[in-house]
Each structure stands twice: as C-alpha cells, then as structure tokens.
Image (cartoon, rainbow, N blue to C red; front, top):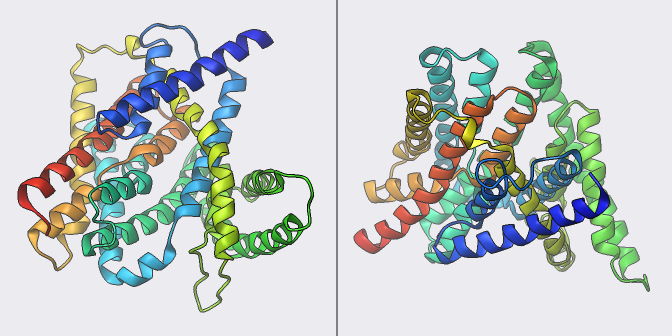
Length: 399
C-alpha cells in the first residue's frame, strides 16, 4: 500500500469509528457496537471500500494491548475482597458454566474440533467490565449492593479470563492441546502476575521522580506507552499472549491495586490519576482501530444466510451465553430481583469477548462462519442486557 493510501484508510477508520460510536451512544447502545458497525460498513460486508492489511493489523494489535492496559488500570481488586463470597460465586459460575456449555455444544452438537470448541467456550466466559460499570453508573447503582457484587465478580472474571486467554493462545500456536506446555504457561503467568507489579511499581516511582524535574512535557505518556509495550514483549517471551502484558501493567499501576498476602504496594493516587488522564487520549486513539478491524475482518457476504447453521449456531450460543452468566447469580442468597439484576449485568461480552474471538480468527481456529456467529453472539449480549437492565429498574424498581 502506498503511503497516501494508508493515510486515507486511517483517517477514514478514525472518523467512521467516531461517527458510528456517537450514533450508538445516542441510541443508548455501547460505543463499541458503533465502532464494530463502522468496520462492517467500510469492509467487504457492505461497501468494500477497504480490507485489513498488515499495517492496520499492527495498529489494531497496539489497540488491543492499550485496551487491556485500560481494563487493568480500572480494575479494583479491593472490590472483590469487599464483596467476597458472593462475587466469587457469581464469577466462578459465570466462568465455568458458559465455558462448559459452550465447549459441549460446539464439540458434541456441532461436531467441531476440540480446539475450536475450547475457543468458543473461552469466548463465552468474557464479561465487559467497562460496559457493566457504565450501565450501573448511568442507573446510579454502582455503589449499591448489586453493583458491588457485579463489579467484584467482573474483576475476578477479567483476571481468570486473561489467564484462560493465555492458555488458549498456547494451544493455538502449539497446534493442539498439550498439558505440559499448558502447565508451563500457568507457571509463567503466575510468576508474571507476581513479579510484573513489583517491577512496574519500581519503574513508576522512577518515572514519577523524573517527571517532577523534567523540563520537557510528555514524559508520562511516552514512558507509560514504552512500559506497556515492554510488558507486552515480556509476556510473549515467557510464552503468554502480548495482551497479558498490557493487562498486568495496567493492574500494577492502578491506584486501587494491592498484592495479596499482605504485601501492599499501593500506588500514589495523584500520580495514578495523572497516568489515567494522560494515557486516556492515546488509548482512545488506538482502541477504536481494533474494533473497526473486527468489522473489517468479517465478510458477511460469504455467509450462506439461508443455511440453518448460522442461525442455529448464533441463537444456541446466545442462549448459552445468557444462561451461563445467570447461573452464577442464581446461587447467591439474595432476592430473585437482585439475582436477576446481577445476572443481567454480567451478560455483556463487549470488547473482552471480541478480543477472544479475534484471537481465534487470527490463529485460524475460527473460519469465517464461526467467527461471524461469535461476533453476532457478542453483539447481542452487548446490546440487549443494558436495555433490559434499564427497563427492569424502571418496571420493577430497585432490588
């Protein structure tokens, strides 16, 4: 691709993503849905104005890493400690049940390979903490009991989901399931989560010190992006996906982060807020590219919509996605109204589900039909629950 053509592609992606995200938000939908549709409109599914190329894929990879950095930065591990047992039950049920049901449905009902079925199950375990927080905040329920349970469970879901992602990544690059390699990955990931926050904390102290004496603006975003990219490289070197590095860096630098076992490495709140504020424009620049690329990678014209496969696949896995997340909420000792609200809040897959699906696609685990089916499931689970939550609170009141 010539340079001027690339510039045209990039400005089109950024403007289309922004426009469609604005439209989605005005329709009370998550902005990620608008960015996804921007890619569908620009790509081969509709107008066919552009298609993914290596440079755009690289920018999308940076967008994924930055997105996971933001998720880690916004993760409040203390919420999990405060809500304790109920959040753990909701998170564990919402991880194990959709994974088991998704794998079983893919492997036995649709006769898919074990690796494809594992990826489908993994994709269905995701919960979008960003969408969940936004909906609860809009409803002014973030600090209420159900909000605290959901946010605590979403934190645990994020951590367990990233570990699961590391395992699936190992299976994809290894060409199959190898328990010895899987054990090595788990050991590496465990060591990474213990050592990375300590290293990140030491680096952040150094950056904070030199920021106060630097006469050149922009030290924090430059060093933070470098730190995130370094951890992404380091994660790859220890056999985990690059995404894990971004998540670990964000988690380590979170103003709400603390290590277990009483080893407190609490970040400077003022400095952490500055990191969050100065990194936000960079994150908001790169992450829409990833979501547009997801839409560009879809070719809905190649799918035989008259075939019962795509409809049965999408609807059955959508049902599994909803039932799986509700299962955890059913086991907590609360009123049925509370359980319903908690279950609904855990359903949105959003950007986290798309990360799983995209990994399946780029690893050639998902073909176009399965990938499209998973994106449809993710879109439905992202769009419908926020609308149902708002309607339920208006109809039935607070739990």
